[in-house]
Amino acid sequence: MGSLLKGTISGLLFAEFTGRVPLIYWHQNCNYLKPVASPFHNAFHDYYQRTCPFSLEDAFKRSANTYPKGTRIENFHTLLDELHQKLSLGEEYFTDICSNQASQADLVVFPTYITIEKALEAIPSDHRFHKMGEEALTEWIAAKFLTVNKGITDQVNDFWAQHFANTEQIVTVHIRVGDKYRECILPSFSRYKHQVDTFLQNHPGGKIYLATDSKHAVKFFEKRYADRVVTSPALRSSGRKGVHKTGADGLQIGNEILFDVECLSRGNHFIGFDESNVFFWVCHMTKAGINGSFSHKSVRPGLSEILLNRQSFKRAAKKTWRNLSSSSNKSA
Image 1 (cartoon, rainbow, N blue to C red):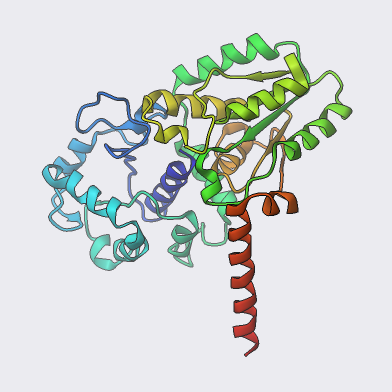
Image 2 (cartoon, rainbow, N blue to C red; image 1 turned 120 degrees about the horizontal axis):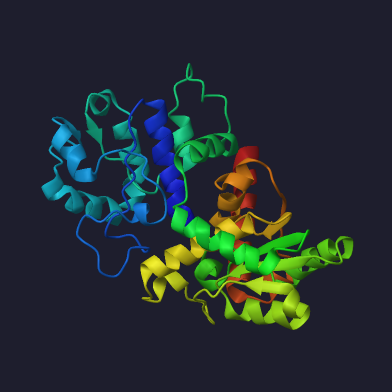
């Protein structure tokens, strides 16, 4: 959900510096859609308040000129499917929607997974956003447009009051496992424990909030910290399969992720892994993160994680080889 939300930030940023009204639409391909939903149900509204006063259907009714040309509500999902299947062409399409032709359209379709960095490149040099960095712009956009639905906020408030009402010092921890190993080398649980121990040494009366997709991570922390660690009753995996790919209720998974993110932002100190989108989300897209209400630190994998995991070893070897090749080419 973190990558989807970062794509949302890109779209909101594009709308802001081009002077458009943003309508965020998480459609039928969204992993966090409720099982039985109408064809044009907008999953974004299940989690966040509207960024636009009218619906997708109304947007098309109001638009005489769309980009891509000829896009209407009747063929909209077909267009989205084509873009979804050709994600590698996303940046090429992004160049198209920055063109003069697209700028004349009443309605422009922005693709889901354009990176924030790519959107930054398109900001005109005379725009006030031009000299702002990724983190600062993300915080500005999130503060303006991303407001968590009251139902989820109320659940977080009740949970927090139940478990942390009389606790002054709280360390929050996010551990991503599942299928994340395909993208990066994951730190061992002991590296998170080391950071937590440092916090608890300075705050002996402190407690821990743990958010994770791993049953093994929960067992690891409960064995070492007993009732000092608190978790939410979320769906978790015991293997290398992402919870969002288990076929479980998408709306439930989405609510659980957002619930965890909001909880992670409520402690005094946050520990995570900065190659997980959740780390960026907690630090730069939550109200507490934007306000700098907590300190944060990312753990790093070590040599043992590389050597003891064949997949990680291959990835590290390939990365080292690419770096050496790149340095060699530059020298030549």
